[in-house]
Amino acid sequence: MAKIKRIGVLTSGGDAPGMNAAIRAVVRAAIHNGCEAYGVYGGYQGLINGDIKRLKSHDVSNIIQRGGTILKSARSTEFRTPEGRTKAAGVLRENKIDALVVIGGDGSFTGARLLIQEHDIPVVGIPGTIDNDLYGTDSTIGYDTAVNTAVEAVDKIKDTASAHNRLFFVEVMGRDAGFIALRVAIATGAEAALVPEVETDLTDLEHFIEKDYDPNKSSGIVIVAEGEKEGGAYSVAKKVAEAHPEYDIRVSVLGHMQRGGSPSAFDRVLASQLGVAAVDALMDDQKSIMVGIMNKEIVHIPFNKTIKHTKGLNPELLNLVRVLTTR
Ligand code: ATP
Image (cartoon, rainbow, N blue to C red; front, side, top):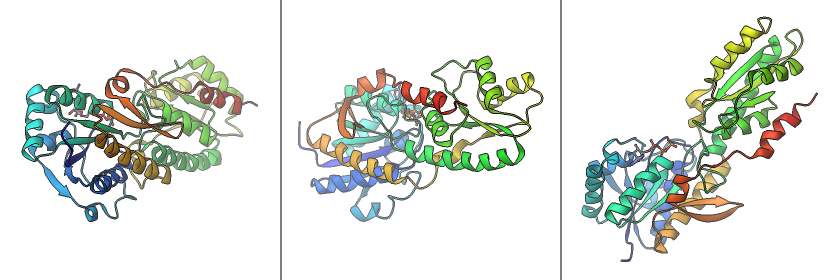
């Protein structure tokens, strides 16, 4: 493989806090290795449109603490087509960019893999999504911050719930995965976590709530993942309210606040490690892999594995919610 001299970096799919820290790490690591770094603005669509700018070290100063992504993120329908990817490859060649670092989720890596197969351009992926739903890494960039943001919000909801003896159903993000919901439930001492990976048994849930929640003298919190199969917090709350009209029920959907904000120290460090690891991997002639972290070690996972496999919830953590709500 010819020596890599110019490395492009883009953010794709949903944004996540810590993406800026990863961009900074990629740019600085590229320069450290004697390469030039190029920012691609607006994900794959920006690549197709040629929206590219050279990034020097000072261009990524003072961004490690900022949420969002200075490169912007976008979803591109055109990149899903072979013609779109041919245009993208042409833009990379015109700009003499030899390799690409893609910060995103499994959709972004699926696109990257096609770009590699069709045009032989080395791409290394960095897992950036609040959902933590990527196989091959214990944690994705943004997940820890999103959990912390949700925990802070639920703590506040608990204060008002307890003042009025209310039962709250709080919906958190996570798409089709329950990682955020499960962690938030444990960290806030919730009565239950309803996640897409486990079928919601409403009778079981009601027993659970009956045990913990007395509308005359206590409050309760149930954390519901947005991908929960009964249809989310509103739907579950409605069904419980029908069975228990005496309950004082409220619903809170936390929504996009979980995507924003300053990244946690954990996410900043993870993003820094993975950004450097991605450039190191390219220097080492790697292509078509995602860099991740498992048991505190940096790992290289082939794109085809991370795309194909699904990461499961830790059953010990699921059990923890039950054990810790014992009365
Ligand atoms: P998140 O988990 O935050 O949603 P993601 O990377 O999975 O991140 P997607 O919207 O699925 O987000 O994908 C981002 C972009 O990757 C898409 O807009 C598209 O351009 C490209 N992409 C996704 N799937 C494919 C595919 N099957 N073929 C080609 N390109 C794809």
